[in-house]
Image 1 (cartoon, rainbow, N blue to C red):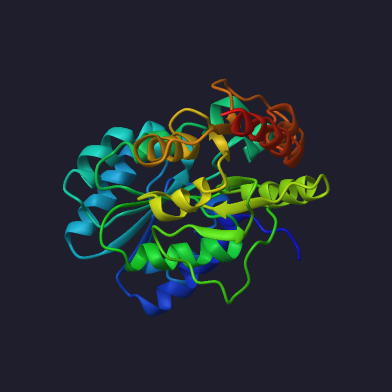
Image 2: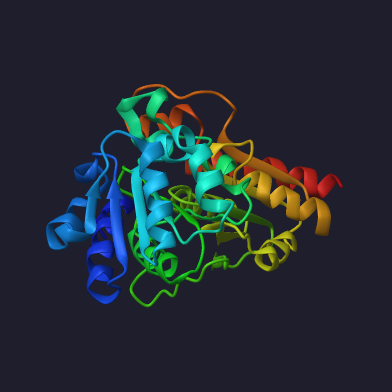
Length: 313
């Protein structure tokens, strides 16, 4: 299957939903060719608004449209959606619990050559800390497409995280995405790998590496970071050891969310794979994943280490 970027699926899903849900309006911070909202703009020009490079105003206007019964999709790069416009997202959208969908593209270190200033690696932490916010990080194009639909039908603020870099195909059209539900992609008993976003593909590859060494790893996809699926995490804890994998700072993202559940419900040895609390650098996305230890080989290595801790405890 060809690799497809989740931002591509976002644009396609918007254009399809626009026919079905007439209250959907789309706002963009002059990045429509990159965020792929240009597909919607071409089809529904009367429901598309280019707000210019003014993300705070973008969020404020989206909030205003939501008070009039519209379903705004506020679209821009993740670094600007979660960072530059944080106060408007917090106070104008989440505090009054308005029905705004924030579509944040170009998230993570795989934005690549744009460098550290455009590599949003803190956005999950920022968004999951805001009350009332739902945070979704799809693994592939099919899940991204279904997540956009689910967000449109969900009442309340939603943060959707999309990537620039094409990713592995995980799901087919028979898959059924549901907000707040994790998915066990592979059963296992020796260690559980819980991954999100682009790292889900790497987690599946890691499980194959481990299988070659006689280690039976469970693989879990967590696309909804908040509210997180406690039930599937506790089932994964039954393996006695957990590795989390995310293209995000290890502080405040998926690994932190999983650790919070385990600490309160079922203490379990855990190793977090992510960006080790440092800024990125300009480079080819695949090269950056290797430099920052976000590959299948890195996950497999961490799994073997955590299994040793499990055995000693």
